[in-house]
Image (cartoon, rainbow, N blue to C red; front, side, top):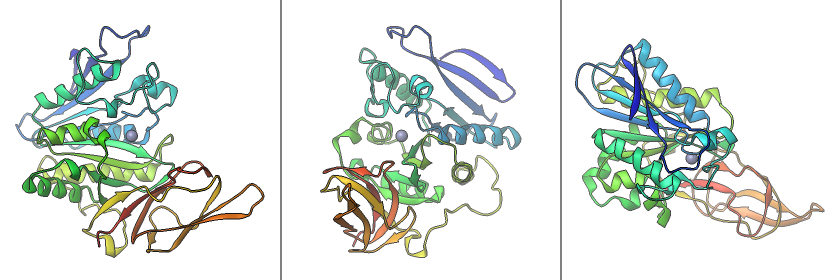
Length: 327
Ligand SMILES: [Zn+2]
């Protein structure tokens, strides 16, 4: 890190992009460090890894603003509001120059591709700070509710899992266990977990646009964590995302099946946040003349987290994100 300037208790630093990059215009990765003079836990907030996920960037801004008014009692909050500036400028998920997804590039490599080099710097900056918890903030489909993801398939130790679940509970959103995919081993949270550092991905509603309600939820959920760690005073009531009672304190599991079998236009019968039952009709797919081609039923009981941005579907397209109850 270099080019540090001090603003009251808040320090703005820059992680320079790797020198070997072919960027004509240097883009800097800004880190914000809010530090109390009393030692205590370190919490990291990472946002903007996907350039089109703007809502979570605003959540980080709002947390820093709130910390200016309500200083930390102890410890430090480190934040990177935009990890992927070139994607951010062009409104794309990936790195604009290389098409890479930084959240599939961890733990990074100092001599690797552009995203791997940056991932290496971000990952090591986090490791050096010995954090209590790392929250990787994301945004999802345009129609989606906030939820917290736990990389359960990578956790071997039960007490570590309990610690993670406790942090997830403090966030107040529906808690969803990730499905195993090899790409989990290349994510930021996955790699932190492999190093026994508590890390959660938090999906804060839709990409592209700032939804003020979801920003408020995001700020409140992070404040819950800071209060839980004794770093700030609580603002009164514990924030909890409004969920149907049957999902309170339950850990659900993530599923994106069933995929479409047909090419056509999908029309949804349910909306994100709705409870869904096994065999309930959740969508119908029609051909171009409006003939019904496929009826989509929920395979399990659970909640609909979100559905796809496009209603044009094709065989194999994944159109839903579900959180199902383990039964
Ligand atoms: Zn994302």
